[in-house]
Each structure stands twice: as C-alpha cells, then as structure tokens.
Amino acid sequence: MFSHLTYQVLFILFMTGLVAGTIDAIAGGGGLISLPMLLSVGVPPHIALGTNKIQGSVGTFTAVCSYYHAGLFNFKTIYKGLIFGFIGTVLGALTGQFISSDVLKQILPILLVIIFIFTVCSPKLGIEDRKTSFNEFYFYSIFGFILGFYDGFFGPGTGTLWLFSLTCFLGYHIQKATAYTKVFNLKSNLIATACFALGQNIDYRIALCMSVGQLIGGSLGARLAIKKGARLIRPIFISVVLSTVILLFYKSYLTSSQIKNLFLSFSLIQIVLLTAGTVAAIGLYIFRAKRAIS
Image (cartoon, rainbow, N blue to C red; front, side, top):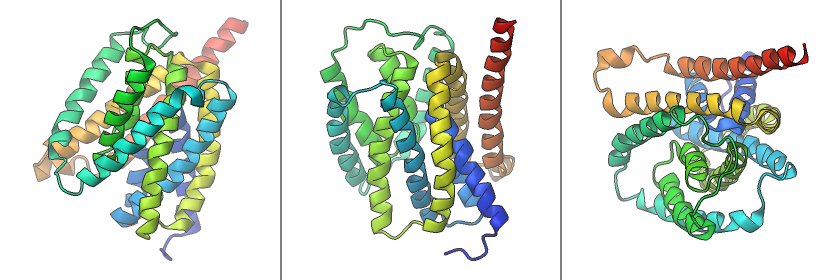
C-alpha cells in the first residue's frame, strides 16, 4: 500500500515489533512503542490502528502460548472473564459510537497515577500468591464485564488495569497475573483486528514485517518474565504505567501549542524510556546472577 517504505524502514518496523513484543509480554504497553512508530513513518491513523492491532495480536498470542505451557493459567478459571469480557467489549464498542469518551480521557490519567503510587509503595504486591476473600466467579464476572466494556469503549491502559486488579483483588503473584492479562488482551485484540479487517484498514505488508518481530519478542519477553518473575516484571510495569500516564496527561490536559511542541518527538521518548527500562532490568539480573555465582 505504501510504496515509499524502504527496506531500511521495514527493518526499523521489524525491530519495533521485536522490542514492543518483548516489553508487552513482560508487562504490557507494547502499543506505546509500535503505534507512534507506525504514525512516524507516515502510515495514516486509521491504517496504523488496524495494523498495530494485528501485529500486536501475534506477539500476544505467542506470549499466551508460552505462559500456557508454563502452567501459569488454565481455561477452567479464565473462561468466565473471557465470556463477560466479550459481552462488555461489544457493548462498549457500540456505546462508543454514540457517547463521547472525553470523561474517561480526564479520569484515566488520575487513576493510573494512583495505581503507580500504590504499586511503588507496596513492594510486596505481586511477589507471591496471597489469600483473598474475593470470590473468583464474582471477580471475573464483574471485572471481566467492566474492563471489557472499558476496552471496547476507550481502550488505553486496559492491560495495566487487569494486571493491577488481579494482583490486588485476587492476590495473584505477578507472573500469574501477567499470564491472565495476556489472555484478556488477546481476546480484545482479536475482536478489534476483525473489525479493522472488515473495514479494510490494515496494511498487511507492514503487519507481516512487524509480526515477525512480535513472534520473537513475545516469546522472549514471556520467557524472561517466567524465569525472572516479579523482580523483572515490577520495574518494567512501573515504567509502562509512568509512560502511559505521561502520554494520557499530554493528550488530555495539555492544550497549549507551545507546550505540545515540546512533545513532538514523544514517540521517540517512549521508545527510549521503555527500552532503557527493559535493558536496565535485564542487566541488573545478569549482574546479580554473576555476583551470586562468584
């Protein structure tokens, strides 16, 4: 579709898919990297959204397979959230056709700030499974529908809300919560991909290129998360939440053109922050492992 895309640009998009897939499999937020990059190379917004969904679905599917083989989730538990999530997503998408999401754009950054502060101030959150009085059936019925509705109606930060809810209300350790979150993300991505495909809003050449990177990144990220656990997932999760907060505050509250000019290269800042956070976390574990061996 876009004949001006050179092999160099396609390679950059491949690497973007790899990095985004790795980070997304560990703590979510891969779209913070892939979507701005698609827009930066000149892909129209409606095509970028559709292409981003299909390539992200590939990485998420790869991560889900890795988490399933590691025994971190089972469908006997998760099906309730998928059913109610599907209903909520469809209703949210339909509602979004008639009602403005401006209120959510104002509220979500504040909610994520609360999640960020709570996570930073609760160093033991998600370290291990803990007992909770919240019934799983009611949790997946209620949160499956609410977060599914939110995902269909608005979308950004859904993975973060799932991960936080699973660790906070059900007491899952963060690896298990991440695995369950990926399944819910895959459900939403597949529904969105089908809608974009029906509207012919996907560039399949770009999607294929980025999907190869997502295949590698999704598998790599899931393996790192399974092996390293909370000590890897927590810092990357916090970085993702912080980046999402900055992005949403920028979109929701900053209206001055002079201020917005400072964020013209925001997509690059996102990539640098999230990639640096991942590299730093992995480097820290390598350093600790060497010290433990010596």
